Length: 395
Image 1 (cartoon, rainbow, N blue to C red):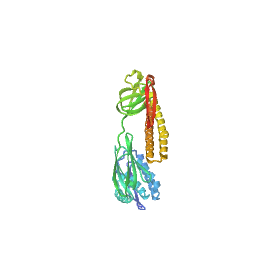
Image 2 (image 1 turned 135 degrees about the vertical axis):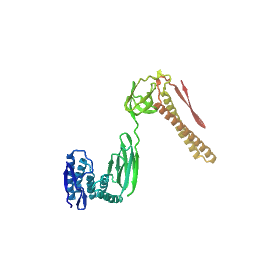
Image 3 (image 1 turned 90 degrees about the vertical axis):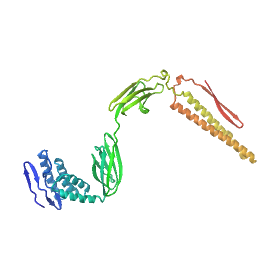
Image 4 (image 1 turned 30 degrees about the vertical axis):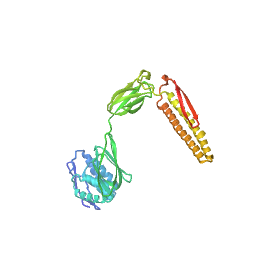
């Protein structure tokens, strides 16, 4: 171990920079070379912390020495303190951290710079055996990037560009900024690979707020064809822009008006809906009797389909099976097929009528107050060769 001489000149500490301890080159104090405008007591405290860290390092207690060096670095940023941190991590086998500290230290000139450069080259050679080196840039550069390594461990960087060593394998990157949509990439990296990655974060749409007050609750609010919700509607975030506002409610006239939503402002609209009777062009919807009529007609058709299948087709086929003559069998079999075809067609038509009637009742039902309910009289006729289905609407 070489001797170290310390001198205090005009309140500034100047340390000799050569201690060799079991092959460990550490900076014993804080020398000049870094401009300092802070309190001298911070520098003095940093010097004390470095000495405490060196004492722990002499006893090979590198894990315990690291917090001392880190505290000193916060009080008085200096390349020689970063060099000491790099050496401590190197001794612990934490090569990624060591590489980072040596890289930061070598951005300035200091007495151990030559030793730092040599160690940095050696560390890089070791890292390339199982790590890839990745350079990350984002647009915008003020973005937080979280790296998730194959082991599940995460590493966070608060700005870009940055360069880091990443374990070989699959790594996920997620970039975020409060004013932008998050962006992410998943990369498969090989040991020794150099990879440059760019993440582009898209700006979030500017938004304002919409408030719609309507004299009737449950009205549907639509902005330029896009449904916004049901009334009452208050404080709804919406993209900035000009829109056509529509307010709809069954039994009432549709209200339309142009509106503009401004960024970070509340656009408030008051709407008084009028009954359909006051709107000659209003959409009254489909009277409910139409739906019920279709359902009834479909049910009748279904009954006829069942009759044709089981009352006509099956007996005809039974007669065909009992026929002794081939020609008689073919005639009766064909008759059974004709009845069965009629049953299928009638059943499909009946199902369609029922389905349409249900849809009209649920989705398109109108106001029955002004509707005149008709009477529907179904007519069914059977003939030796089949039958027909019909009916009469009476108003």
